[in-house]
Length: 447
Image (cartoon, rainbow, N blue to C red; front, side, top):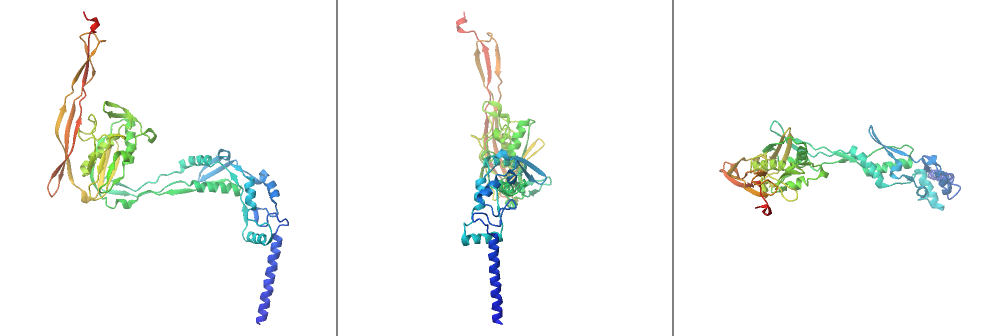
Protein backbone atom coordinates (compact mmCIF):
# COMPACT_ATOMS: atom_id res chain seq x y z
CA UNK A 1 0.00 0.00 0.00
CA UNK A 2 2.80 2.37 0.92
CA UNK A 3 4.64 1.57 -2.31
CA UNK A 4 1.48 2.19 -4.34
CA UNK A 5 1.06 5.62 -2.69
CA UNK A 6 4.64 6.58 -3.31
CA UNK A 7 4.30 5.49 -6.94
CA UNK A 8 1.21 7.64 -7.45
CA UNK A 9 2.92 10.64 -5.84
CA UNK A 10 5.97 10.14 -8.04
CA UNK A 11 3.86 10.00 -11.19
CA UNK A 12 2.03 13.22 -10.15
CA UNK A 13 5.33 14.99 -9.51
CA UNK A 14 6.66 13.98 -12.91
CA UNK A 15 3.44 15.17 -14.57
CA UNK A 16 3.74 18.53 -12.73
CA UNK A 17 7.30 18.96 -13.90
CA UNK A 18 6.25 18.14 -17.46
CA UNK A 19 3.38 20.67 -17.29
CA UNK A 20 5.65 23.41 -15.95
CA UNK A 21 8.21 22.65 -18.61
CA UNK A 22 5.62 22.71 -21.38
CA UNK A 23 4.23 25.96 -19.93
CA UNK A 24 7.68 27.50 -19.91
CA UNK A 25 8.29 26.37 -23.47
CA UNK A 26 4.98 27.87 -24.56
CA UNK A 27 5.58 31.11 -22.67
CA UNK A 28 9.20 31.51 -23.68
CA UNK A 29 9.56 33.64 -26.81
CA UNK A 30 11.30 32.05 -29.77
CA UNK A 31 13.72 34.99 -29.72
CA UNK A 32 15.58 35.15 -26.43
CA UNK A 33 15.71 38.96 -26.73
CA UNK A 34 11.92 39.27 -27.05
CA UNK A 35 9.37 39.95 -24.29
CA UNK A 36 7.89 36.80 -22.74
CA UNK A 37 4.22 36.01 -22.27
CA UNK A 38 2.64 38.05 -19.47
CA UNK A 39 3.88 41.47 -20.62
CA UNK A 40 1.11 43.78 -21.85
CA UNK A 41 0.92 47.30 -23.27
CA UNK A 42 -2.33 49.15 -22.75
CA UNK A 43 -4.05 45.83 -22.17
CA UNK A 44 -2.67 44.24 -25.34
CA UNK A 45 -0.12 41.41 -25.25
CA UNK A 46 3.46 42.48 -26.04
CA UNK A 47 4.77 38.89 -25.90
CA UNK A 48 7.33 38.03 -28.53
CA UNK A 49 8.21 41.65 -29.37
CA UNK A 50 11.86 42.58 -29.52
CA UNK A 51 13.00 46.02 -28.43
CA UNK A 52 13.15 47.15 -32.07
CA UNK A 53 9.66 45.81 -32.78
CA UNK A 54 8.26 47.45 -29.67
CA UNK A 55 9.99 50.69 -30.66
CA UNK A 56 8.23 50.61 -34.05
CA UNK A 57 4.91 49.94 -32.32
CA UNK A 58 5.48 52.92 -30.02
CA UNK A 59 5.97 55.16 -33.07
CA UNK A 60 2.34 54.51 -33.97
CA UNK A 61 0.30 57.49 -32.72
CA UNK A 62 -2.83 55.32 -32.39
CA UNK A 63 -0.99 53.03 -30.01
CA UNK A 64 0.34 55.88 -27.91
CA UNK A 65 -2.64 58.22 -28.13
CA UNK A 66 -1.02 61.10 -26.20
CA UNK A 67 -3.89 63.22 -24.86
CA UNK A 68 -4.35 66.83 -25.93
CA UNK A 69 -6.51 67.62 -22.92
CA UNK A 70 -6.95 66.19 -19.45
CA UNK A 71 -10.20 66.54 -17.55
CA UNK A 72 -10.00 66.70 -13.76
CA UNK A 73 -13.16 66.02 -11.82
CA UNK A 74 -14.54 66.62 -8.33
CA UNK A 75 -18.10 65.33 -8.23
CA UNK A 76 -20.05 67.37 -10.79
CA UNK A 77 -17.33 70.01 -11.08
CA UNK A 78 -14.76 69.58 -13.88
CA UNK A 79 -11.65 71.41 -15.07
CA UNK A 80 -9.86 70.99 -18.41
CA UNK A 81 -6.08 71.28 -18.68
CA UNK A 82 -4.31 71.43 -22.03
CA UNK A 83 -1.48 68.88 -22.12
CA UNK A 84 0.64 71.42 -23.99
CA UNK A 85 0.24 73.89 -21.12
CA UNK A 86 2.48 71.79 -18.88
CA UNK A 87 4.78 70.43 -21.60
CA UNK A 88 3.51 66.82 -21.72
CA UNK A 89 5.67 64.71 -24.09
CA UNK A 90 5.92 60.95 -24.68
CA UNK A 91 9.32 59.50 -23.70
CA UNK A 92 9.80 56.42 -25.96
CA UNK A 93 13.24 55.46 -24.69
CA UNK A 94 12.14 55.50 -21.06
CA UNK A 95 9.15 53.32 -22.03
CA UNK A 96 11.43 50.79 -23.76
CA UNK A 97 13.76 50.74 -20.77
CA UNK A 98 10.82 50.14 -18.48
CA UNK A 99 9.45 47.31 -20.69
CA UNK A 100 12.69 45.33 -20.71
CA UNK A 101 13.89 46.19 -17.21
CA UNK A 102 14.16 43.33 -14.74
CA UNK A 103 14.14 40.60 -17.39
CA UNK A 104 17.07 38.18 -17.49
CA UNK A 105 18.79 37.50 -20.78
CA UNK A 106 18.59 33.70 -20.80
CA UNK A 107 18.92 30.46 -18.88
CA UNK A 108 17.28 29.57 -15.57
CA UNK A 109 16.83 33.25 -14.59
CA UNK A 110 14.87 33.82 -17.80
CA UNK A 111 12.67 30.84 -16.98
CA UNK A 112 12.04 32.14 -13.46
CA UNK A 113 11.07 35.54 -14.92
CA UNK A 114 8.54 33.80 -17.14
CA UNK A 115 7.08 31.93 -14.15
CA UNK A 116 6.67 35.19 -12.25
CA UNK A 117 4.91 36.80 -15.23
CA UNK A 118 2.59 33.82 -15.50
CA UNK A 119 1.60 34.34 -11.87
CA UNK A 120 1.24 38.10 -12.17
CA UNK A 121 1.00 39.99 -15.45
CA UNK A 122 3.08 43.13 -15.95
CA UNK A 123 1.61 46.17 -17.70
CA UNK A 124 4.14 48.39 -19.45
CA UNK A 125 3.31 51.94 -18.43
CA UNK A 126 4.00 54.60 -21.05
CA UNK A 127 6.56 57.09 -19.79
CA UNK A 128 6.13 60.85 -20.17
CA UNK A 129 8.06 64.01 -19.39
CA UNK A 130 6.36 67.19 -18.21
CA UNK A 131 7.10 70.54 -16.57
CA UNK A 132 6.32 70.12 -12.87
CA UNK A 133 6.16 73.88 -12.21
CA UNK A 134 3.68 74.50 -15.03
CA UNK A 135 1.48 71.60 -13.92
CA UNK A 136 1.66 72.95 -10.37
CA UNK A 137 0.43 76.35 -11.62
CA UNK A 138 -2.58 74.70 -13.29
CA UNK A 139 -3.38 72.77 -10.13
CA UNK A 140 -3.03 75.96 -8.06
CA UNK A 141 -5.98 77.43 -9.97
CA UNK A 142 -8.06 74.34 -9.17
CA UNK A 143 -7.04 74.44 -5.52
CA UNK A 144 -8.42 77.97 -5.24
CA UNK A 145 -11.88 76.55 -5.95
CA UNK A 146 -11.44 73.39 -3.88
CA UNK A 147 -9.83 74.96 -0.81
CA UNK A 148 -11.91 75.27 2.34
CA UNK A 149 -10.20 76.84 5.33
CA UNK A 150 -10.38 74.88 8.58
CA UNK A 151 -12.47 76.51 11.27
CA UNK A 152 -10.94 76.32 14.74
CA UNK A 153 -13.20 75.80 17.70
CA UNK A 154 -14.51 79.10 19.02
CA UNK A 155 -16.24 80.59 22.05
CA UNK A 156 -19.04 83.11 21.68
CA UNK A 157 -21.20 84.96 24.18
CA UNK A 158 -24.83 84.60 23.11
CA UNK A 159 -27.88 86.78 23.68
CA UNK A 160 -28.89 84.69 26.68
CA UNK A 161 -25.71 85.60 28.52
CA UNK A 162 -24.12 82.20 28.09
CA UNK A 163 -20.73 81.19 26.74
CA UNK A 164 -21.31 78.84 23.81
CA UNK A 165 -18.74 76.52 22.26
CA UNK A 166 -18.68 76.39 18.46
CA UNK A 167 -16.97 73.08 17.52
CA UNK A 168 -14.08 73.01 15.10
CA UNK A 169 -14.60 72.09 11.44
CA UNK A 170 -12.05 70.45 9.17
CA UNK A 171 -11.10 72.15 5.93
CA UNK A 172 -9.69 70.70 2.73
CA UNK A 173 -7.24 71.39 -0.05
CA UNK A 174 -6.05 69.70 -3.22
CA UNK A 175 -3.63 66.83 -2.59
CA UNK A 176 -1.05 67.85 -5.18
CA UNK A 177 1.15 64.76 -4.94
CA UNK A 178 -1.71 62.27 -5.22
CA UNK A 179 -3.43 64.21 -8.02
CA UNK A 180 -0.25 64.40 -10.09
CA UNK A 181 0.30 60.66 -9.54
CA UNK A 182 -3.27 59.97 -10.72
CA UNK A 183 -2.75 62.10 -13.85
CA UNK A 184 0.50 60.36 -14.79
CA UNK A 185 -0.96 56.91 -14.05
CA UNK A 186 -4.00 57.63 -16.25
CA UNK A 187 -2.08 58.88 -19.28
CA UNK A 188 0.46 56.07 -18.90
CA UNK A 189 -1.92 53.11 -18.81
CA UNK A 190 -5.34 54.17 -20.15
CA UNK A 191 -7.18 55.90 -22.93
CA UNK A 192 -9.56 57.60 -20.50
CA UNK A 193 -8.33 60.99 -19.33
CA UNK A 194 -11.09 62.06 -16.96
CA UNK A 195 -9.42 61.86 -13.57
CA UNK A 196 -10.82 62.35 -10.08
CA UNK A 197 -8.71 64.81 -8.12
CA UNK A 198 -7.39 63.86 -4.70
CA UNK A 199 -8.03 66.05 -1.66
CA UNK A 200 -6.55 66.12 1.81
CA UNK A 201 -8.21 67.27 5.03
CA UNK A 202 -6.96 70.35 6.89
CA UNK A 203 -7.21 69.90 10.65
CA UNK A 204 -7.73 73.01 12.84
CA UNK A 205 -4.92 73.74 15.27
CA UNK A 206 -7.17 73.92 18.28
CA UNK A 207 -10.17 72.06 19.64
CA UNK A 208 -12.85 72.53 22.28
CA UNK A 209 -10.65 71.11 25.06
CA UNK A 210 -8.77 74.43 25.10
CA UNK A 211 -11.87 76.11 26.54
CA UNK A 212 -12.53 73.85 29.50
CA UNK A 213 -11.67 76.57 32.08
CA UNK A 214 -13.49 79.42 30.28
CA UNK A 215 -17.12 79.62 31.32
CA UNK A 216 -18.23 83.25 31.70
CA UNK A 217 -17.83 86.84 30.54
CA UNK A 218 -15.40 88.80 32.71
CA UNK A 219 -16.06 92.12 30.95
CA UNK A 220 -16.99 93.74 27.66
CA UNK A 221 -16.67 97.15 26.04
CA UNK A 222 -18.17 98.56 22.85
CA UNK A 223 -17.55 101.57 20.62
CA UNK A 224 -19.46 102.99 17.65
CA UNK A 225 -17.91 102.69 14.20
CA UNK A 226 -18.38 105.71 11.96
CA UNK A 227 -19.81 105.19 8.47
CA UNK A 228 -16.56 105.13 6.48
CA UNK A 229 -16.29 102.02 4.27
CA UNK A 230 -12.49 101.72 4.14
CA UNK A 231 -12.27 102.24 7.88
CA UNK A 232 -14.95 99.60 8.50
CA UNK A 233 -13.11 97.06 6.32
CA UNK A 234 -9.83 97.71 8.16
CA UNK A 235 -11.51 97.15 11.52
CA UNK A 236 -13.16 93.94 10.26
CA UNK A 237 -9.85 92.59 8.97
CA UNK A 238 -7.97 93.26 12.21
CA UNK A 239 -10.89 92.02 14.34
CA UNK A 240 -10.90 88.69 12.51
CA UNK A 241 -7.23 88.21 13.44
CA UNK A 242 -7.67 89.24 17.07
CA UNK A 243 -10.85 87.23 17.70
CA UNK A 244 -10.41 83.99 19.72
CA UNK A 245 -6.99 84.94 21.05
CA UNK A 246 -6.28 82.96 24.22
CA UNK A 247 -4.02 84.39 26.93
CA UNK A 248 -2.60 81.86 29.35
CA UNK A 249 -2.05 82.75 33.03
CA UNK A 250 1.07 84.89 33.30
CA UNK A 251 1.28 85.41 29.53
CA UNK A 252 1.78 88.83 27.91
CA UNK A 253 0.31 89.45 24.46
CA UNK A 254 1.17 92.12 21.91
CA UNK A 255 -1.57 93.65 19.77
CA UNK A 256 0.90 94.30 16.95
CA UNK A 257 2.23 90.74 17.02
CA UNK A 258 -1.27 89.28 16.81
CA UNK A 259 -2.75 91.61 14.19
CA UNK A 260 0.49 91.98 12.23
CA UNK A 261 1.56 94.74 9.85
CA UNK A 262 -1.22 96.72 8.22
CA UNK A 263 -0.28 96.38 4.55
CA UNK A 264 -2.10 96.53 1.24
CA UNK A 265 -1.04 92.93 0.55
CA UNK A 266 -3.06 91.83 3.59
CA UNK A 267 -6.10 93.79 2.39
CA UNK A 268 -5.81 96.97 4.45
CA UNK A 269 -7.02 100.18 2.80
CA UNK A 270 -6.33 103.89 3.08
CA UNK A 271 -8.45 105.58 5.75
CA UNK A 272 -8.07 108.51 8.17
CA UNK A 273 -5.40 108.02 10.85
CA UNK A 274 -4.19 110.30 13.63
CA UNK A 275 -0.53 111.29 13.51
CA UNK A 276 1.53 113.74 15.54
CA UNK A 277 0.72 116.46 13.04
CA UNK A 278 -3.03 115.83 12.80
CA UNK A 279 -5.34 113.63 10.75
CA UNK A 280 -4.23 112.18 7.39
CA UNK A 281 -4.80 109.18 5.15
CA UNK A 282 -2.89 105.99 5.98
CA UNK A 283 -3.06 102.21 5.53
CA UNK A 284 -5.06 100.53 8.25
CA UNK A 285 -6.92 103.58 9.50
CA UNK A 286 -9.44 102.44 12.12
CA UNK A 287 -7.31 99.69 13.70
CA UNK A 288 -6.66 101.99 16.67
CA UNK A 289 -10.37 101.84 17.48
CA UNK A 290 -10.07 98.06 17.85
CA UNK A 291 -7.03 98.52 20.10
CA UNK A 292 -8.95 101.09 22.16
CA UNK A 293 -11.99 98.84 22.55
CA UNK A 294 -9.75 95.95 23.60
CA UNK A 295 -7.91 98.21 26.05
CA UNK A 296 -11.11 99.17 27.87
CA UNK A 297 -12.38 95.61 27.99
CA UNK A 298 -9.02 94.55 29.42
CA UNK A 299 -9.20 97.25 32.09
CA UNK A 300 -12.70 96.16 33.13
CA UNK A 301 -11.76 92.46 33.22
CA UNK A 302 -8.77 93.00 35.50
CA UNK A 303 -6.03 92.26 32.97
CA UNK A 304 -2.67 93.94 33.49
CA UNK A 305 -1.61 96.79 31.19
CA UNK A 306 2.04 96.36 30.20
CA UNK A 307 2.19 98.96 27.42
CA UNK A 308 -0.28 101.56 26.18
CA UNK A 309 -0.02 105.00 24.58
CA UNK A 310 -2.69 107.67 23.96
CA UNK A 311 -3.27 109.41 20.64
CA UNK A 312 -1.79 112.85 19.99
CA UNK A 313 -5.32 114.29 19.96
CA UNK A 314 -8.55 113.06 21.53
CA UNK A 315 -10.74 110.63 19.57
CA UNK A 316 -14.49 110.63 19.05
CA UNK A 317 -15.31 107.09 20.19
CA UNK A 318 -14.07 107.26 23.83
CA UNK A 319 -13.34 109.92 26.43
CA UNK A 320 -9.83 111.25 26.95
CA UNK A 321 -7.67 108.82 28.89
CA UNK A 322 -9.39 105.70 27.59
CA UNK A 323 -7.94 105.46 24.08
CA UNK A 324 -4.99 103.36 22.88
CA UNK A 325 -3.05 104.13 19.73
CA UNK A 326 -0.98 101.55 17.87
CA UNK A 327 1.54 101.69 15.02
CA UNK A 328 3.07 98.44 13.89
CA UNK A 329 6.70 99.52 13.87
CA UNK A 330 6.70 101.74 16.95
CA UNK A 331 3.67 101.86 19.28
CA UNK A 332 2.05 98.77 20.82
CA UNK A 333 -0.68 97.69 23.20
CA UNK A 334 0.45 94.86 25.47
CA UNK A 335 -1.72 93.07 28.01
CA UNK A 336 -0.90 90.56 30.75
CA UNK A 337 -3.15 87.84 32.12
CA UNK A 338 -2.67 88.04 35.87
CA UNK A 339 -5.60 85.70 36.58
CA UNK A 340 -5.38 82.06 37.65
CA UNK A 341 -7.06 80.77 34.50
CA UNK A 342 -6.81 81.43 30.74
CA UNK A 343 -8.87 84.20 29.18
CA UNK A 344 -10.16 84.49 25.62
CA UNK A 345 -10.68 87.66 23.58
CA UNK A 346 -13.93 87.58 21.61
CA UNK A 347 -14.61 90.26 18.99
CA UNK A 348 -17.99 90.96 17.33
CA UNK A 349 -19.19 93.65 14.95
CA UNK A 350 -22.96 94.07 15.11
CA UNK A 351 -24.30 96.81 12.85
CA UNK A 352 -22.24 99.89 13.84
CA UNK A 353 -21.05 98.48 17.17
CA UNK A 354 -17.58 97.06 17.77
CA UNK A 355 -17.74 94.77 20.81
CA UNK A 356 -14.73 93.22 22.54
CA UNK A 357 -15.32 90.72 25.32
CA UNK A 358 -12.88 89.07 27.69
CA UNK A 359 -14.16 85.60 28.54
CA UNK A 360 -12.69 83.67 31.44
CA UNK A 361 -13.33 81.63 34.54
CA UNK A 362 -16.00 82.65 37.03
CA UNK A 363 -13.42 82.34 39.81
CA UNK A 364 -11.51 85.30 38.32
CA UNK A 365 -14.52 87.62 38.07
CA UNK A 366 -14.18 90.99 39.81
CA UNK A 367 -16.32 94.07 40.44
CA UNK A 368 -14.35 96.71 38.53
CA UNK A 369 -15.08 100.30 37.52
CA UNK A 370 -12.93 103.06 35.99
CA UNK A 371 -12.61 106.66 37.12
CA UNK A 372 -11.10 109.80 35.56
CA UNK A 373 -9.37 112.33 37.81
CA UNK A 374 -7.41 115.59 37.64
CA UNK A 375 -8.75 116.58 34.24
CA UNK A 376 -7.14 119.74 32.86
CA UNK A 377 -7.60 121.75 29.70
CA UNK A 378 -4.50 122.92 27.86
CA UNK A 379 -5.19 126.23 26.14
CA UNK A 380 -3.71 126.66 22.67
CA UNK A 381 -0.95 129.23 22.18
CA UNK A 382 -1.08 131.84 19.44
CA UNK A 383 1.76 132.05 16.94
CA UNK A 384 2.02 135.21 14.81
CA UNK A 385 3.98 135.21 11.57
CA UNK A 386 4.80 137.92 9.07
CA UNK A 387 3.60 137.74 5.47
CA UNK A 388 4.96 140.47 3.16
CA UNK A 389 2.49 139.48 0.45
CA UNK A 390 -0.46 140.63 2.57
CA UNK A 391 -1.46 144.32 2.66
CA UNK A 392 -0.01 146.15 5.62
CA UNK A 393 -2.30 146.15 8.63
CA UNK A 394 -4.26 143.03 7.57
CA UNK A 395 -4.09 139.52 9.06
CA UNK A 396 -5.60 136.08 8.58
CA UNK A 397 -5.74 132.77 10.42
CA UNK A 398 -3.87 129.97 8.60
CA UNK A 399 -4.29 127.34 11.32
CA UNK A 400 -7.05 127.12 13.86
CA UNK A 401 -6.10 126.52 17.47
CA UNK A 402 -7.47 123.61 19.44
CA UNK A 403 -7.36 123.08 23.16
CA UNK A 404 -5.59 120.02 24.51
CA UNK A 405 -6.16 118.15 27.73
CA UNK A 406 -4.65 115.85 30.28
CA UNK A 407 -6.28 113.33 32.58
CA UNK A 408 -5.48 110.49 34.97
CA UNK A 409 -7.36 107.18 35.02
CA UNK A 410 -7.76 104.81 37.99
CA UNK A 411 -9.18 101.31 38.27
CA UNK A 412 -11.45 100.70 41.28
CA UNK A 413 -11.80 97.09 42.48
CA UNK A 414 -14.40 96.07 45.05
CA UNK A 415 -14.07 92.82 46.96
CA UNK A 416 -15.10 91.17 50.23
CA UNK A 417 -11.54 91.70 51.49
CA UNK A 418 -11.75 95.46 51.00
CA UNK A 419 -11.85 97.90 48.12
CA UNK A 420 -8.69 99.04 46.39
CA UNK A 421 -7.68 101.25 43.51
CA UNK A 422 -4.95 101.11 40.88
CA UNK A 423 -3.37 104.03 39.10
CA UNK A 424 -3.58 103.23 35.36
CA UNK A 425 -2.39 106.16 33.28
CA UNK A 426 -1.70 109.85 32.85
CA UNK A 427 -2.67 110.85 29.30
CA UNK A 428 -1.67 114.15 27.72
CA UNK A 429 -3.19 115.48 24.50
CA UNK A 430 -1.17 118.54 23.44
CA UNK A 431 -2.99 121.62 22.25
CA UNK A 432 -2.68 122.76 18.64
CA UNK A 433 -1.45 126.33 18.35
CA UNK A 434 -3.40 128.94 16.46
CA UNK A 435 -1.30 130.45 13.67
CA UNK A 436 -2.00 133.99 12.42
CA UNK A 437 -0.13 135.81 9.66
CA UNK A 438 -0.01 139.62 9.46
CA UNK A 439 0.75 141.79 6.50
CA UNK A 440 3.94 143.83 6.74
CA UNK A 441 5.87 146.24 4.49
CA UNK A 442 9.35 144.99 3.55
CA UNK A 443 12.16 147.03 5.11
CA UNK A 444 13.53 148.16 1.73
CA UNK A 445 10.15 149.74 0.89
CA UNK A 446 9.64 151.58 4.13
CA UNK A 447 9.97 155.44 4.08
